[in-house]
Length: 94
Image (cartoon, rainbow, N blue to C red; front, side, top):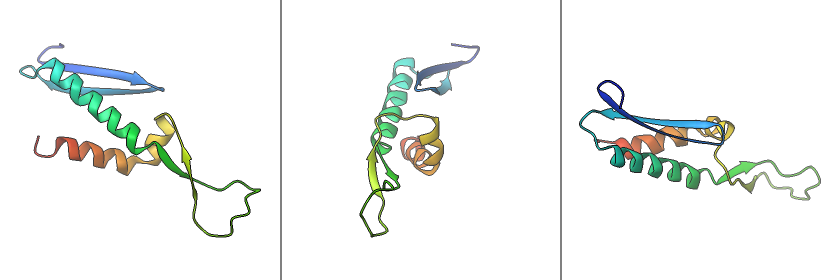
């Protein structure tokens, strides 16, 4: 607690997530919301589009899906709209 707010944070892969609530908020509930947000982002950003390799024999215009096991700064910036949509869905009318 800091002055009249409650703040929780988690840090992974060089990204630090903060969630701030009023003094009347439950700290455990805020921590649960933050964990759910991080898990949602991890699930949504697990598969990202990537260019086919140069020795690929594919002639179509579709991109291969690449499995990415982490959510780092770059993937968050490349998928900013997904991050904002996830946040909006979690906090809509909340």
